[in-house]
Length: 134
View 1: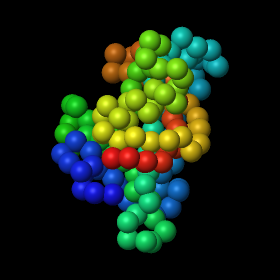
View 2 (view 1 turned 90 degrees about the vertical axis):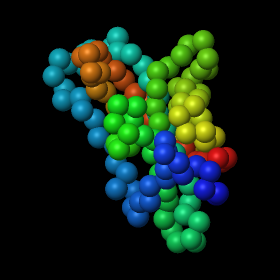
View 3 (view 1 turned 60 degrees about the horizontal axis):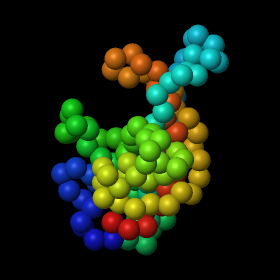
């Protein structure tokens, strides 16, 4: 991989174990199973590449947040029924739009339930994805 990916908007962060990458849900169970039934849908990718150094390590793609340029997150965004065939397509599109990286699905990581800044219900489907082109 070249240095084209590393810029002010995104970077790969190195991790030494899968436990360092664990996703956690903010949903506390209050309100029952139906609480997030009509939530806004989003998708995101935990996109990785193998470390160039030959060690058994991976690097995770992070993008800067719009509101706080010193803060990083993984690429994610709203599901667009006109543009996205499914949630994997949404995660891939968002990763391309936010970081200029093409990736392919490796595994389904499940749903992350949360609330937006305006207290709207949000469900985000995350996928483990391999970077195939920068």
